[in-house]
Length: 275
Image (cartoon, rainbow, N blue to C red; front, top):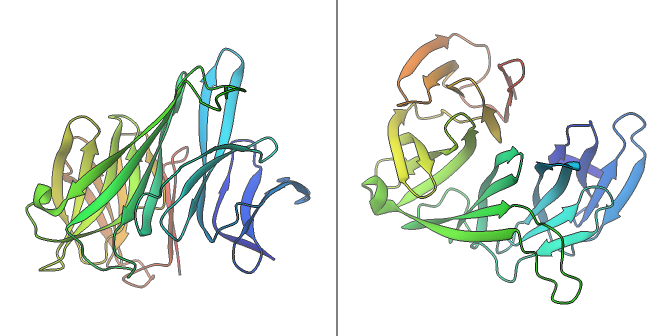
C-alpha cells in the first residue's frame, strides 16, 4: 500500500512516498513506470517527506527529509538509494506542525520543521519550536567520526509573547524565495484570530498581518514573484512579500470555506485547491 499524502516529487519527476499501513516505510518510485527503485525503513510512524537540494560544481545533490509523528524526529536519506545520511538525536517537539523547504541553490540547502509541545492537534501553546536545517559544502560524511562538516541545525523558539499573545497555534508554512523568509500562519489562542507572519532567521518577525478565519498557505509553497497566494472563505488572496499588504482578492470560488489540500506551482504562478 502506497500512501501519497505527505510524499514528495523531485525535479526529475521521481516520487518518494510512504508505504505500509503505518507509513513505516519510504519508497522511491520511477515517475514513468512507478516501479520501486529503493526502499528505506525508518522504523517510526512517518508524517512528512520533502526534498532538500543543493548545487555545486558536480551538479545537484538531493536528500529526502523524513519527519515522524511522535516527538518530531528528523532524518535525511540520500535520494539516489535512500541510504541514511543523518539522523537527529532528539526530536523537535511533541508533534509536527509543518515543514517547508528554504534555499536550494548553489552552495546551500535549507529546511524548516515546526513542532508543538502539545500532542493535541490545534491546541494553543506558549511556545512552538522551529528547527532550521542547513547543508553547505563540504557535505560528505566523515567515515571515521560520522560527522558532516557542512551540516548544521538550530532549534529556534517561537514564543507567543513575540507575537503579542499568551498562547499560539502555528499552521501552514511556506517560503518567500525572493527575500529568504519563512512564512507561516499564527492563531491567537485567546481570540482565535488568525495572522500571516513573515520571519527571517537572525532578524525575527519582519511583519504580521491579519488573515481570514479559514485562510491558509499552500503546502510547502515556494513564492518566486514577490507575491504570496492563500485560500480561505471561498476566496484567493494575493499579498505583497514586502509588507503583507493585499494586492488583490478574488471571491466566489465554488470550493468550501476550507479545503483539504492547497498547492502552488511556482513555475506557472498557479494555485490549486481541492476538497
